[in-house]
Structure formats: structure tokens, C-alpha cells
Image 1: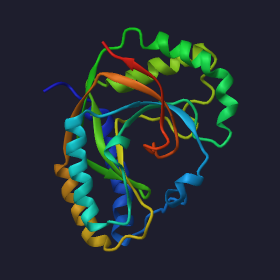
Image 2 (image 1 turned 90 degrees about the horizontal axis):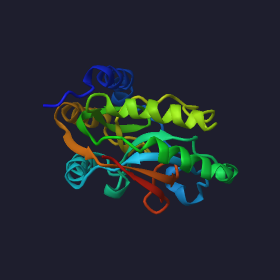
Image 3 (image 1 turned 180 degrees about the horizontal axis):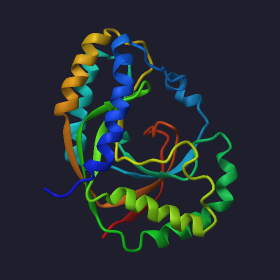
Image 4 (image 1 turned 60 degrees about the vertical axis):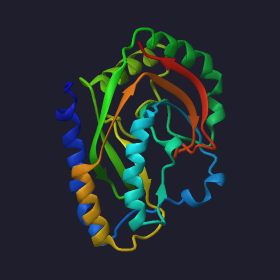
Length: 234
């Protein structure tokens, strides 16, 4: 088996779970105010994302369907919405158009950055949680994803585009969000029991062969996302 970045990412996932487990048991979750009225959400951003391959999508959708049986009223990601965020150029905002004059600079920076990037594997093993939702725990081969992120940050900064990176938090994992909470939990104890099982059993694997630059809303909604450019890896 290839060397995956378990040592750097697993502690992050474990900390999230430990911080959230007791809240889930009490049904203490955060309901996203935008989810039920996404058509009215005008916030947009530019992001780089990885789409899982067909086999990984099928495996992840099996996990989603399992959870959905217990909590059907939550927001579940569609297969075409599944993704791993590589980097967001800026957090989604209503004043997205203010960034349009920078388009050519972003494009030049990205085309330079992706000239010699090799393909890499992501393994998904188990799930973790926050009060906002659930995620598949992703682990990138040989820390390739974080090395790519650092490379992109450096190139974007060289092009004068670094100021808006990592404004919310510095992304460090290869997670894929699969559920967001939009309704109170029906049966928190049973829900948590199922999550504990999936935390040890859920799995999927994908080979990252390309990175997509997209215009997106907060949820990467399939009827909102627009592909700007796709960068194929070697």
C-alpha cells in the first residue's frame, strides 16, 4: 500500500470527532440557514477542487444512503456534488464580481503552477463530524495534496493574489463533505451509533488525474457550479 498522510491528517479528524461526539449525542447541531433557500444565496467564489472517480462516488453514496435512512431530512450531497477542495481563492461572497478583473492573473498563475504536477491517490477511510455536518476522512498519498496547496499558495502569492487565501482557516485535509445539517436530529443516540460504525468501516479510493477550477456557491451545488478550466495532471 502506498504511503498515505495518515500521520498528519488523522489527528485533525480525531480532534473534530472528539469535539463533536457529545454534541451529536444530545442533538446539538448547527442548522445552516442557507440550505433550504439556496436559490436566494448569491454568495459565489472561485475554488480548485478534485472530483472523485466513479468507483469512489459509488462507495461514498453507499455511506450517504446508509445515513439517510436514519435522518432523511438532512442535506445530502448528490454524486455530482462530491469533491475535495484543494484551495479556495477567497471565501464565497456576494460581491464576487469585484474579483473578475483579476481573472487573467489567476489564469496565468494556475497555468504556471500546474505545468508539472503528478497524479496522486486519495484514500477515504471512515467519517468524522462537526456540528455543521459529516465528512469522509481523506488521506492523500505522500502528503501530495498539502504539498500541492503550498505550491499553489506560493505561485498565487508571487502573482499578487495571496491576500485572500486561507482567510477562514488553512485547509489541511483531504476530506469530502457528505452531509450538512438543516433540520433537528430525529433520534440522536441511534444516529450516533450508526456514525460510530461508519467511522470504522466507510471506505473509498480515487486517483486524482485532474484539478478543476470552478465558480461555486458554498455548497458546490450542481445547478450552480460553473467549470472555468480543468488542469490535467501528469
